[in-house]
Image (cartoon, rainbow, N blue to C red; front, side, top):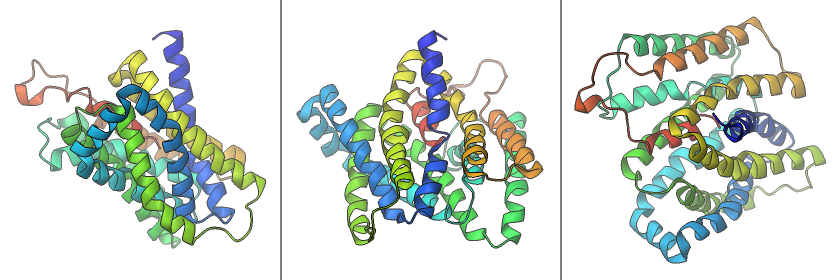
Length: 314
């Protein structure tokens, strides 16, 4: 990998490891869930729409929306609006580090979702072992929380992970001919429109503190707008297959950020769950070491992997 590739990889590893910290600061500072979603999507749309217009032109972007708007709208709801709302709501009761670790189960859910929705890629013994190990990690992490009354929040985060797993499948199967950056810009615009009304209805009565405003700004500008620009640059630099690797670093960043900046606990349970979930994800996402594949077992199209990397890490 080139020096530029390593720089982009490091940036993505950090940038999509810290949203959970920023969401936690925002919701504990009195910002409503719709406001968190609206701020994130609106700023992202403002930054990415001009880039999409430069890439396709106004006519090309309008044609993209006209041809694909039902699927784009479905993707927006499944992969952005609902997951980001559920995530923010869950962090009223969960630590940011636990949230980041639970989201790390997304690659495992993506493998299952692909198989259950008619995918032809074979799941061999190694990948089944990865699925089992990963879900064991989720059980280790969530069992104390379930006993402590946080079952609803845990379910919300796991539903978020389901959305992150299903969104890429929808994109790969129905939007494989749509360039990533224009698609993201359009979806962020749709998400802004959907969240604007609830955000206005829950507008804070008083100006949030500087710390909360900084968290919202970081979430919107760095973790959404800038992150997508860097993400697509990383794909161009190293290709989608190698770009997905930063997904495995994000949970470690999420845990470290929560412990260092919020004083969240770093317990043996966290360490055990981290090892199991990340180890299970790596095994579950590995390719079969068998001989020449049958036509139905060829690796998925390149267009599928950028979406998988993207959604699994936020």
